[in-house]
Amino acid sequence: MPGIDADARSGAPREHGRSRRHILADAQGIPLAVPLSGGNRSNVALPLLLDAREVSSWMLALGVGIAVTCAGLSLRYKAPVVTSWSTPGAALLATSLSGVSMGQAVGAFVFSAALIMMSGLTGWFARIMGRIPVPLASALLGGVLLEFGTGLFSQMGGSFAVAFPVFVLYLLARRLLPRYAVLIALGGGVIASVLTGGWHLERVRLSLAQPVFTAPEFDWKVLISVGVPLFVVTMASQNLPGVAVLRGSGYEVPVSPVLTWTGTVQAVLAPFGAFGINLAAMTAAICTGEGAHPDRQRRYLAAVWAGVFYLCVGLLGATVASLLTAMPHALVLAVAGVGLLATIEASLASALSDPTSREAAVVTFLATASGVTLLGIGSAFWGLLAGVLTSVIAAVGRRRAAASPPAPAPQPVTAASRTPERTSA
Image (cartoon, rainbow, N blue to C red; front, side, top):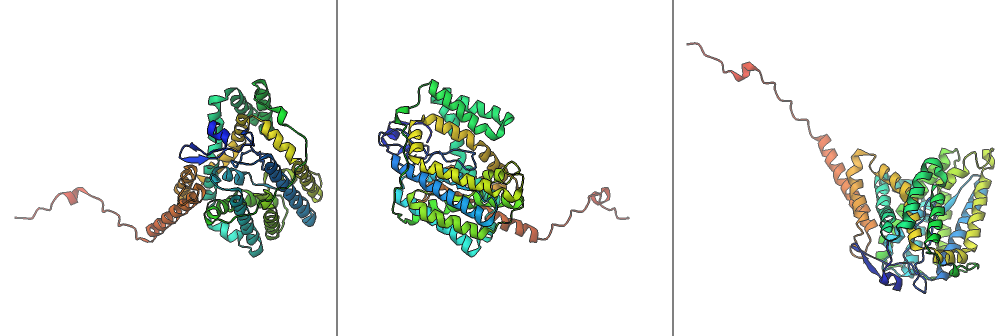
């Protein structure tokens, strides 16, 4: 993804390491990126070839879906149930949709939503996710996000004047104003890119978003390589911490109905671009804190207003899309890099925290980050499969070692044992 060449501007796939990538561009070939923030933490870019109407439709679908689930579930349970789009899921799509048509991508979105909906209806979310060790899920996320982290530094080769200030401002803000670190880095990057003349403000226009319907196509390879990893990443990296935040704040919201509703709304809006709607963690932590309202029984109102805000963003999706067209590509990738640094750090720390699963986590991370494609299935699936295989073999080895009797302790060697006894004449 980092770096735009002639093939990228023409919309043709290009070589990038061992994998092929498509650059999201508008009809004029201008790089176009969809910024997606999960809990106001990070931005990512999706590599589909979309026109401005399709981008605005994606924004509208996500905004409406989050507004409905945020406001509806919060009012239903009188608790700050905050939903968002899946930042890890978007990062997964950015590395898994090469050569995939829009219809096939929508089919994967619907399939992932159906799995989420089924997990809520049947209640097997805890059982299924319990079989995937947390370190492996964290390693999978880290492998998916690695390209975005390295993209920050690769941009310094051609756009040092933009990428380096973003990086430095982020580091300083993390120490002084950590909550606003990404926003401060973005502001500095905007100023730097304006001074270097990288903006195309003539493309910005004020207009409302319009829905664009795409009929889903269900290709089994895409369902396995995109739909299944999207489901796993969304559940493990978004819904799981989202539930933990709610329960850690004392809100015992029933999980299964919440998952059923988020999966249903995502399935309905997927043909319009809603790739993932899930529980938020960081935004939920803000809405469940004292800063949202002194009375914890009234903090659900903060989540309702968050839904209203998302609705406004969705309705202005066309304006947001045109603004993204005007943004320099280096700025998008640099902000994505710094925004995901904390997520990558947390993923690697969780992946390597348990010594018994450390080897499997490393295998998962490396296989996922490799970008390998086998049988038309992307690296996220193979990374998880390689990690599970490593974990199973390691567990069998540990059980065999525990079951085998301990070796007898060697007898101490004494001077008498080394000296042969002398027989009497």
